[in-house]
Length: 69
Image (cartoon, rainbow, N blue to C red; front, side, top):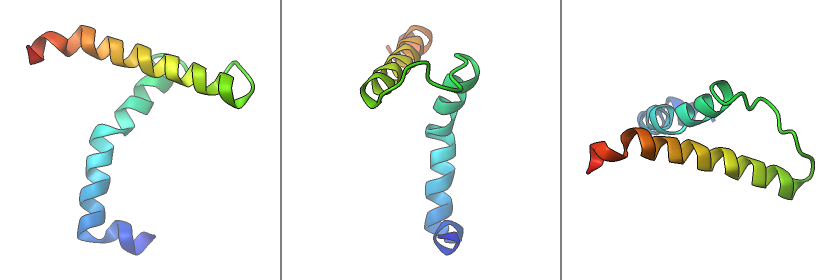
């Protein structure tokens, strides 16, 4: 795995991930204080995670939606 990540293609993929995926988890974890789920069970945890993602996406639309228009 280290060889794959250290290759040129691996570095490109990882740098793209750092700019696209990781900020979302950082935002949900720090600004929304989701460091553990308050519900138990797979379906309930999935529902809680989807609500956090929905809130994140609505905030993005509210803050940046007019820039695209």
